[in-house]
Image (tube, rainbow, N blue to C red; front, side, top):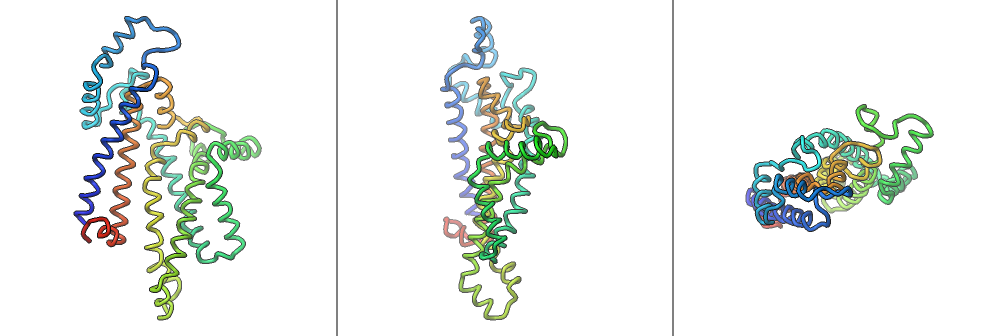
Length: 310
C-alpha cells in the first residue's frame, strides 16, 4: 500500500506542474494587458506599473518568480485590488464558496445515496421510478436554467426565499439546491448501478443461501464494493464545489471565488487568475489522491492492480 501511495504522489506532482505551467503561459498569451483599459492610460504610467509588478521582465524571469512564490504559497499582489494580496482575496472568496460547496456536497450525498439504494432494491416501484426520473431531469437540466426557474418559483411567485445576495442563512438555500441537483442525480445513478451489480454476485447468492438477513447482506457485503464508483466521483466533485461555481455565483450575486475569477479574467489580473487556478488544481489533485488511497484501502486489489503492494 505504501508503494502505491508513493507512486500516486510521484505522478501527481508533475501533473500539477504541467497544469500550472500551461495556465501561466495561456494567461500571458491571451490578448490584452493588465493595465490597458478602454480609457487610454498614459504610456509612462503603464510602463511604471509594468516595472512595479515585474511585467517588463523576460517571460522566464516572470515564470521563475511565479514558481518561487507558488512554493511559498505567496501569489503576490492583485493588479485589480492593489490594497490586497491574492491570498487575502482568495480567503475572502473561500469564506463564501466553501459553505455553499460543503452544503451542496452534503445534500447530494444525503439524497443521492438513499435514492440509489432504494432504486436498486425496488426497481419496479412507481414512486422510485418517478424519483429516478427527477434524478435524470437533474442531470440534463443545466444550472443556468434550473437556477432562474427556482428564483421564479420560490422568490418571485411564492416570496419564500430571497432571489440573490449573501449574508443570511436563507441565502444559501437556492444556490445549494441548484448546485447539488446534478450531483444528486449522478450519485443516485451510480449507487443504483453499483448496488445492482453487487447484489448479482455469486457471494451474495451464497449469503442468501446461508440464511443471512437481506439487510445484513446489503450493509456488510454489497454496499462496500457498490460505493467505490461513487467515491471516485465525489472526490473530484468536492474540489469543484469548494472552488466555487462561476455560473451559480453569477446567477445569485454571490461574492465567492468564482465571482473573483470572472472579475480577474475581465481585468486580466494575472496573479489572481493564477492563484485561483493553482488552488483549484491543488485541491483537485489532492482530493483525487485521497480518493484513490481510500479506494485502495477499501479494496486492496485496486492497489495491487495498479502496481502497488496490498
